[in-house]
Length: 120
Image (cartoon, rainbow, N blue to C red; front, top):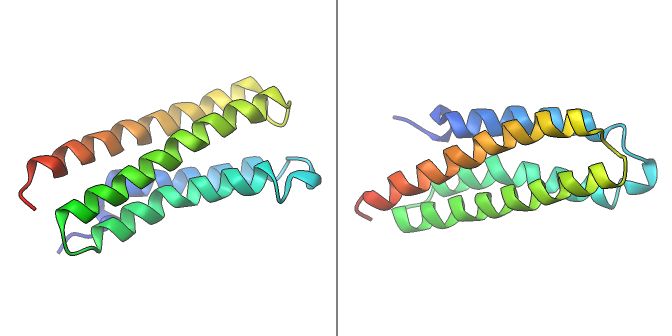
């Protein structure tokens, strides 16, 4: 039986969370409850909502949780831009993260489209 752990989007989002945590370790300490916390929360929300949605009883609920993950994806994309503007992360490092994040977003959209084609 396949689970969320078999999904490439879940695997890549888990890897992304790890990388983001390492990157935000260098943020100013006064941001630990600010932008650092917000970014980490949004990043963790992506694989968490994929997992929670896949454990639901209906396809409709699964899709709802995938949309929540997509919302966290958009939130994190915005927060990365803010981190660059505040010089907490350089443009090169941010672009590397955004490339990974964009790939996760594409996979999420693909999974949503696939699930919408299935019967509930």
